[in-house]
Amino acid sequence: MKALTILKTTIAVLFLQQTAFSQEVKKETISTENKYTIENCVNHFEIDKAAKTKVGYQYWFADKNFTEENTLKMSIVEPGKSTHAPHHHPEEEFFYILEGTAEFYLDGKTKTAGPNTSFYCPPNAEHGIKNVGSTDLKYLVMKKDLR
Image (cartoon, rainbow, N blue to C red):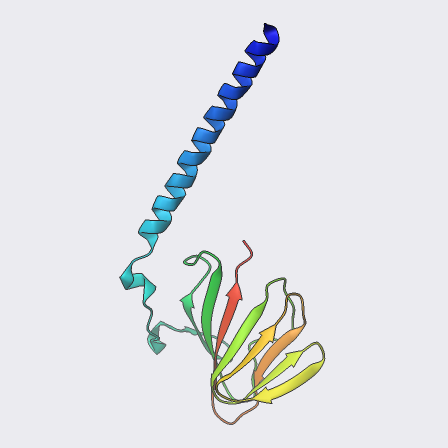
């Protein structure tokens, strides 16, 4: 009899926990659905909304506060400069060259390329990108956010 009472109590507690969890998931789904509209899901580059950096500009089309997992940023780098020294991080990363000439560094080797070229950086690989041309380098950076 006592075992049956414990079992019923355990089932009731599990049911209440699942109900509470389902309500939280429903709240998150509702807030996520309301977060995205046609107005904020279409983003046109405007230089006056770009953030000035030491080497040019950066413009976030989608940052980790807006998207579920991915980010999309455009970097504009002045000739002879790079956004930062070679580094590594756990996220994989894609670079897509829009304009200019880039030198891509990956684990001790480099490759130079121009527009319509992509560079892939696997997780934890040492990498970097710099402008080796005589005009501004403009490229997209796509990365998955590991929240």
